[in-house]
Structure formats: structure tokens, C-alpha cells
Image 1: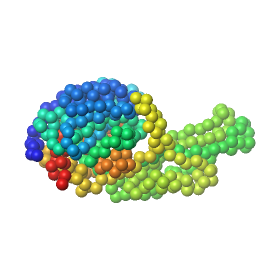
Image 2: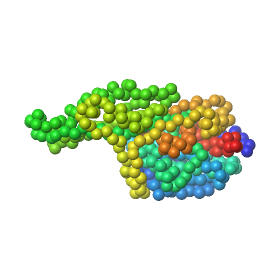
Image 3: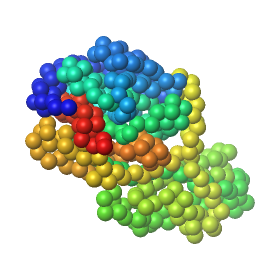
Image 4: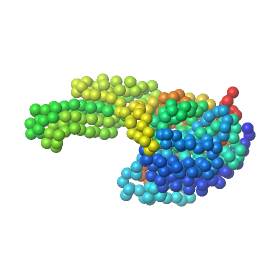
Length: 403
């Protein structure tokens, strides 16, 4: 199927105001993890308004919008939950109203990652306007609970909705570059146990906090010596939280727990990472418990879909048709070669490709360094570029990469 790249770009540019308004509407709706209902309903309204062929909300609360009826299922995903705003006084503008000028839109979720959602919906409109439908069905997903438990939404979509696309475009922020992988991660809990007694005679007890101290030092050293990888970089770990149990401030602590954020590079498995910690001399000496956290929070619909807090690494080969489709689309639209790189942070790709081996490729408006930041913003020209890319990716794939 032949099409005119210039017309696609012109259409995307023509919808800049619509995309911007839709994004600002989403930003204005607080949608932290497990509380996304209102923003999902706003997306449903916009999908129907621009002419999606089918729109449904699944029992977890994810919104699934379909364009076309062809046999090749291609999906594009944006999580629509956000983190909180932190200290309100650190924001220059109201994070739920934001600021708009000729170049940027600011507010919580503008880059991470409701901007991707806005561009995807208007890509659907461009497909309809320019009759770009072909032998594909395009599934646009607005997914929930990613900030809390990345990939859980797609565990549900694959396992319960029985949806398995040929590939998925992740629309997390990439500065309009093409990303083909990310490190995985784990949330690990280490607990030491002691014996409580009155603080006036600590020798009668066994202080669990003291037992944790050498473990912290050995974890810090372990981080410096983790596996490295030419593409994804080095694995890492950091202690992110510490908790204790004690009868009072005048007592010896009988339990101490830390949380570890462990990032896994290519070649590291969850078993390997867990055993590294179990093998530390301080952990063995303290007889500490080392386990992966479980996630059991209900979605906004009340559905609980338990999982372990393990999020696998994934890397797509650069020569894969999904990656080459995006490279071709980028060159055709923008007349230059794209940067092909990887994310520093984690995405829903941990389930889509990490668990289920469904090929993933990333392209999104907004910048990684805006994620979770005060005064978060995104760029209007990137929203337009992304809408144009999303509109032509399916056609290029089914015409050039399907044998």
C-alpha cells in the first residue's frame, strides 16, 4: 500500500491542538496507580469521538481500543497511571492544570506517560482520515497499575483476555528515539530477627538493627561488582527502604527489614540475583530471610491479580522486523536516521517480552528525565511526531515485513 509521508505529517500537525487539549484533560484528572477510573473514562470518550471501531474496558480496568479488522494484530501501549506530585511548592505551575505555551505542556503525567496515550489516539484518527487501514488490527491499550507493578496489566491481558499481538510498541518517553530494550528489576526484602528487651539492659536481648548494619555495607560493595553488558549496561542495586519492629523507643529492636531495588542486566536471572544476596557472609551470619516481595493491591475495579515483584530483562535484536519497521517509518517521515537505544528505567515490556516473548519496541514523546520529576513537561512537536509514527507503523509492517 502506497501512502504519502508528507500528508501523514500534515495531518498530525493539524491535530496538534486536539492532542494538546486531550493531554491536558488527562493531566487534570488525578490518576495515581489503582485510582485510574476517571482518566480511563476520559480516554474512552476520546476514542469513540475520533472513530475507533471498538472500545472496551477489561475487568482489571485497562482500556482497549481497536482500529481495523485485519488478521495481523499489532498493539501500542501507554500506561495511564502516574506517581504522586510530591511537595506541591516545588512545582512552578499546578501539576493538575499545568502550563502550555508554544513549545511545551507541563503537569504530572505529561511525559510519563499520558503524552503517548494522546498521540496514539490521534494516530487512530489519522489512519481513519487517510484510509490507511490494511490487513491489520491496531490495538491501542491504556493500561493501569504500571507505576505500582509494571507489566501486571499485560499479565492480565495475555493470560485472561487471551490477547497476543505480533509485536507491541511501547510509548514510554524516548525523546522520539527508538528503544529496543531495558534492564529488568526485582523488589527484594531482607529481614533480620532479634530478641527484644528493655533498652536499659540491651545485653539481655539481641538487636536486629545491629545485625542489619554489616549487611548494608556488603550490599553497597556488591553493587560495585555486578555483571556488566555492552548494550544495557551494568546491573545495580540500592537499599530503598528500612523498617523495624520494637516495643518502644526504650527497647531493643526484634526485627529489621530492608527493601532492595535490584536492576538486572542482560544475562542476570532472578535466581542468580537472589542467591548473590543469600551468599553474603553477613546474611549467612545473621540468618537473615531473603525473599522477593509479592504484589496484591486491587485495581480500581477491585480486581486482585497477585504476582511476584520480579520484572524480567528484555532486548529486541536490531534486525528484528518490529525494529526495522520503526526505523523505516522514521526515515520516511523525518528524512534522517534515528537513534536506536534503550531505556534506563522499566516499562510494561517486562511482561510483554520479558515474560511472554512478544516482541517489543519503544517510541514515545517526552523525555526520560521528566519521569517522576517536579515540573514534568513534554514537547508538542514530539507529540505530533509520535502521532505520525504510530499512524504509519502498522501499514509499513504488513506491507514490507510480512511474508
